[in-house]
Structures are given as C-alpha cells and as structure tokens.
Image (cartoon, rainbow, N blue to C red; front, side, top):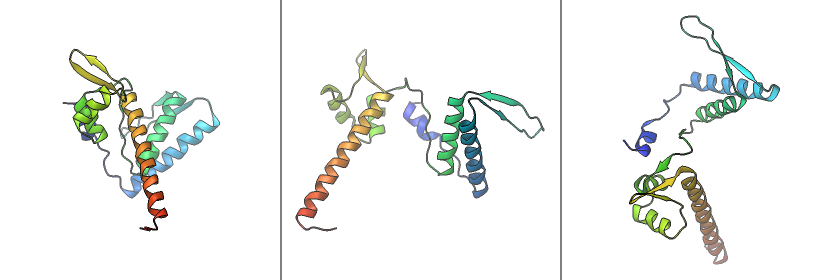
Length: 156
C-alpha cells in the first residue's frame, strides 16, 4: 500500500459535542502546564482504575496540545515522518496535479528530487516547500486578476 493511500485511510472519528469539550479542556490544561513549567507529567486513568503517571518531554506535550487543538476544531490531521519520500504519482496526488506536470517541474529544477535507479523520489519537506510556493504563486495571480477586474470596473 502506498504512503499517500495510508494517509487518506487514517481519518479522525467524528467527535460528539461532549468529546469536543473534553478535547478542548485537555488542550487548555496541557498548554497551561507548558506555560508554567519546564517539564510535566500526565496521569492516565484506565477503566481498571489504574493511574499510571508518565513523564512527557515539553516538545511532545506541545505536539499533543496542538493535535488536541486541531481535533477540537475538526481539522484533519496527518502525521508523517519528515524523512518520508514520495513517488511521482504520490507527489502528483498530494499536489492535485498530473504526474507529467510533476516530472516537468523536477526536470526544470523547480522541484528537488533524487533518483533511485530509474525512479524519482521527492522528500516530504521539499514537496511541502514546493506546495507552499505554488499556493503563494496562485494567490499572487488571483490578486493580480482581482486588481485588473477592479481597474476595468468589473465588480463581482
């Protein structure tokens, strides 16, 4: 199974209003703990009545807090190792463009990649940087179109 397919398979379950409130409270508690201390512990309560306490590094606690915040807002979450590499097909699916377009961008030097035998691989961080640059370019083009429309008196 390809990486991009696995990422799409994992979806957060819909949260009930009670669950959303629990997530919000947990996120607030975690972020408050980070503001007031350098290290923190989490006490887990299980159905069996156990209360194990776990030491968590501040960076991990911050990540957990950010994940809880995204969950409470209903935003999709994808976790992937930073050294993850994509095939040209996966990169095209990720960018929502065609595979030939991805290859053209690679060959022109606009999308960094490496070759594994005859196959091209794109690092996740390079793909994310390219996607961000692509969105900025698109936003600039849309702004120029809107400016042109305003100059011509074509209000939408």
